[in-house]
Length: 160
Image (cartoon, rainbow, N blue to C red; front, side, top):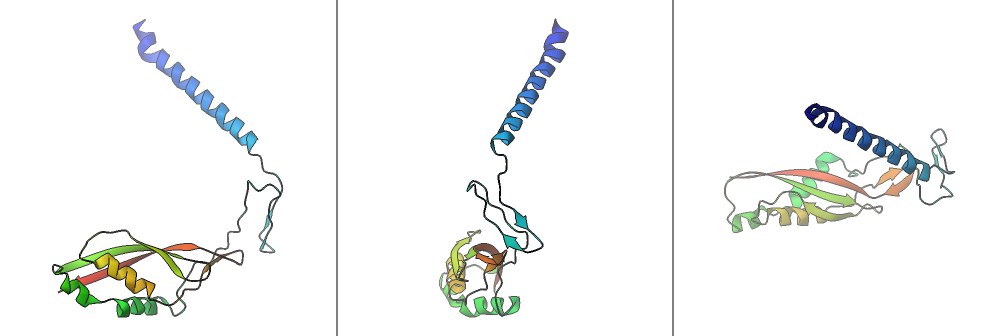
């Protein structure tokens, strides 16, 4: 009896759970069978499905980018950044690596800027302000259609 309780019964329970899971997944896949709508890679076209539950995307996405290049992007952020504000807030000497996430909209505007780090002393607020003042980006595209996309920007600040 002890052998059954320790070895065989747990295996039977595990098998029942596995069979239940497989049956559940099979039934779910039947409920969401694909209907109509195709993506043609050769023509690069996007065709809408008749069933609005599904959307098909091309795999030729082009990422958003700053039109003048990465170096000029960092120059623009640096030019807009006010270091004197941090010294006024009495920030300690050191190196601060700040991460900021922002969205490049379909129109190329920078929106939804959120800091991923929280050092304080107004660092994150000043980086957000500096990024907001920069020029528009070229938006990301998918199948030739402009889309919103997110960027993660690391900024290193050295206080001497």
